[in-house]
Length: 335
Image (cartoon, rainbow, N blue to C red; front, top):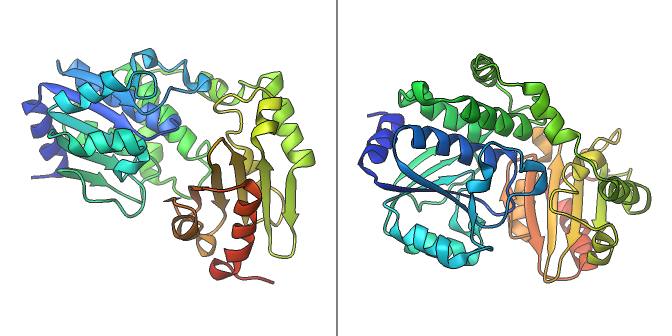
């Protein structure tokens, strides 16, 4: 039996389904969650979406996204959802810790059947079924594969199509990353057949700057950007005080690390953001020979894709930068 038919059989038996995704929601996590929500609801299932933290402002336009419940906002409600479910989908993450320690522990404790749909490297063994493909450009692409493979295309609505387009578009950098496949464009063609307004989706993601956000980005690039021309890497540091100075809102630094990577000659870029108890780190790189995920997992409690990874450092932002510069030669050639 194919993985799609196995998932379909699990869904058919389920009465209470919960869809989860990782902390710090992005286009792919929100898009895959909402697309699957719309399809399963159309199938007549009782479905709720539970995320660890709130949807960022720049994604509030996604159809019916207001229905998402979040652990930070009401942990008792989400706990009960997970513990009372008989089927839990784990979208766009490959280990329980990506939900945060508290929600991840509840997920593991739940006796519900669990299904992972994800495209990140090295998936952990914590689910009953796993639709994992690291060559896929996004979890939304895998969700579309499931909808097609499980013969649910008649339940694919305009709202679900919008959500899938969002996830594929954002996780491929508007179709420019090497992860884009012929299959990706085949799926996009099928989504456009629903007459979704794809240009408005791009506008909703890219044309949402506030004055504070623009000024923060300008400050980051003019005052906080460090370029190592010899070893071809660049990084930006933003302290908690600096973020607060520009009235930082979640999502305001989205794409900033890619701006550093866009400098001619750069092969690696890093963004360090300081919060109350830790430093959040975003790694980006170009080329197979410059994979950043191993360094992220080895020294920065993180991981992810070869050219796009995340991590954190439990210390000062200065220490985080120093550690990065210290371990850099272990993973990348120096000149």
